[in-house]
Image (cartoon, rainbow, N blue to C red; front, side, top):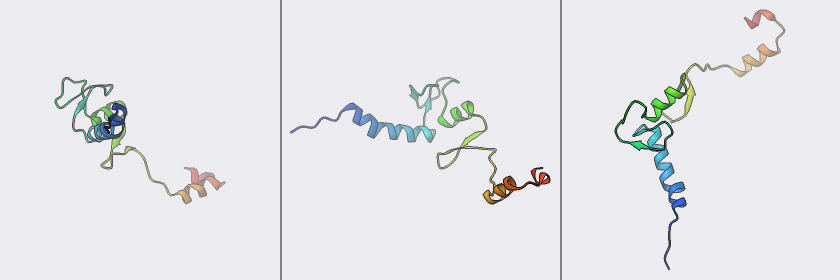
Length: 94
């Protein structure tokens, strides 16, 4: 009995996760559409994932946990926000 691994299986289960992880870790350069990649920068249009994210989405950053977040986000206390929204005191809105 012989087994044949289909190309779809290899791509979806083996190559895609490895390619995605290496791209997010900026281990190689890709063209604008991520259809071609290289270990060396070909020209200025070839960028790493982090460079591409900065160019396409200014104001966002790629964190150490590989999550994309907004740089200018502020943390708020939900209880304070709800009390502000429920309040009828106009002076609190300033």
